[in-house]
Length: 252
Length: 356
Image (tube, rainbow over all chains, first blue to last red; front, side):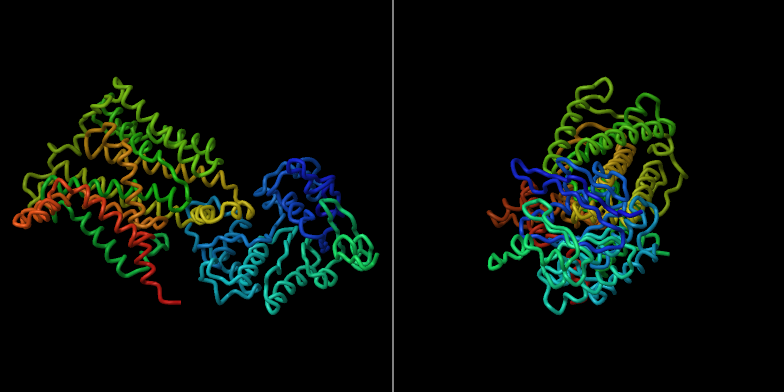
């Protein structure tokens, strides 16, 4: 199996505006691909099309060669596409642990169990505690998610994705708005995930040094179209990126 | 053991535990503690409304769905028993048939409403349920051959529950052991079992997903939970419990009509009971229903006393006149919602939590 995920001519139009324009791209298993581009390039929209929050106007999404274009978001999640959101998206009045535990529970397919008591499923709680440890939130396990400072909410967002243990991890600016000393926790997690080489990782990130260091490959979106694709060093050096993304007018 | 009975969901506040035990004791020994037909009636009504309010909380407080069709399912239960007994006679088979049919009708109706309309926005859903409930009420009062119309149906209950039935000649602790007493304990026991069952459901993995959906449906979906399935199931369960509450009401009153089980007034009362007690706690239903129904029944008596005491003071005398009881009921509820926005249970739990 050489492709984990593929998009074919994936397109979405909002009225006259083409937000994602015929993007064809394949993602090999065990690799980390960064998707870069200026604000409004369509990166998050492209993510939404893959994870199912938006339905494509045309084009297809294939997971391990299987067409999932028609599947709604929950089904895509259960099939192994996991997503962390750019704007923090938590269960605000539930505890930090419960936010994670709900993801573990979904993975264990226990949601429709009406007869047991949730706390009797010790293994789910233990797993949630493990994940909490990896995102350095153990001390705050009983606080409601809404009481966390922004940086911790970002960590929780990533923690929920980790708990889902999908085949395809999609990080949408995981470190956005985090303080400098908090960023390494998240980056270490992604780095470790990458070295295991059994997961496919898609990353949207603005910090170019991070992208350069982590990526196996970089894809550049501009005005909804794929404009460059390749090895990190080559892509970053290419004139189209220098102009379109980094906005280096001086090179002209 | 005790924790398991409550599905691990303990009151988590000493004051709340005491209040709940107080309500439990008062209801368990009501026939012996509070003599008289009115007191027993109030106690039975509290039991029935505990089930009804808790089942509404399952929908409103846990899943975050606003429905105005809850009394419709309550009414289906009451009509089911009333119609079945009227047709089949006062036998247990009649009660069983009525309950079975009512549950089936509620199941189908709540499933249909759920599947067709839980995808729409919350406000539209509330409007749809309002429309369906109004249509059902009109139907119930129009089909008078079947439902007794506006007059409703009076019927006999199985002999065991009728006042003429006597367990033994001599009264026990001053209370005659007749069918009425048995009826009360039937209602009380059923209430206890149904409440514990609902407590189990909201504390199951499923119940936890309901709360997640209430908090953030979009995120719950991204985690892989099909929210339409969960919302619909919650809608169906809530409807079935309301139906059983209706069955208990009919058995207790030996009568059912549109005003006793279907009226919009009851819908508003349930809403108030949930909010006063504390949404999304289930225990709130116990306190909300108890407080509301006791106030509703005894505020007037209390005011009569106050009015007599205040006879020499002209303005105050008029203000506390028993005819003004609805005004005071209203004021009481406005104040309590203002003071306890998370309900009594929410307030007590907040107080009990050690400062972080």
